[in-house]
Length: 113
Image 1 (spheres, rainbow, N blue to C red):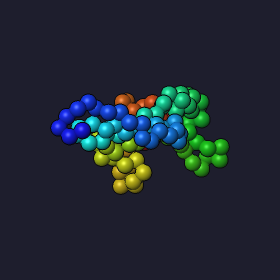
Image 2 (cartoon, helix red, strand yellow):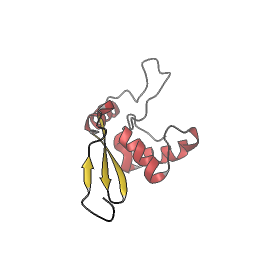
Image 3 (cartoon, one colour):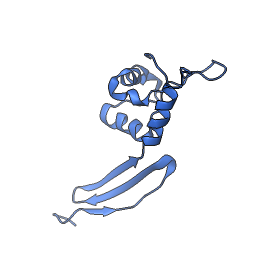
Image 4 (cartoon, rainbow, N blue to C red):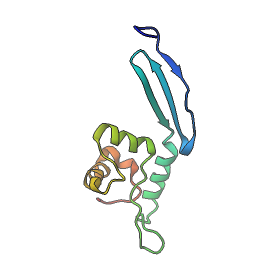
C-alpha cells in the first residue's frame, strides 16, 4: 500500500531444511526476510562432544572436528561481520570468533584454534 498502511506478514516461503524457517514480510518500505532455526539441539550436541574426552578427533585421528556452526549463525556472521565461514580467506576471522568466549558454545573440541 503506497504511502503507509499496516505492515503485512506473509508466509511466502516456509521450509524446514535443517530446522530452518524462512518467512517474508511485506511492509511499506519493501520486503523483509526473517530466518529462524532451533539451535538448541546443535548446541546440546556440541556440549556433549566437547565433554566427551575425545578432543574432537575421528577414530583414526586423521581429522579433528572443532565446531558446528548453525546455519542462522553462519548467515548472521555474513550479515553482521562480513565473515563467510566457508571462505578460506576468512579463516583468521572465523578462528577469532570461535576462540571467543561469546561463541564457545559452537565448539566441539577444547583448546584454541
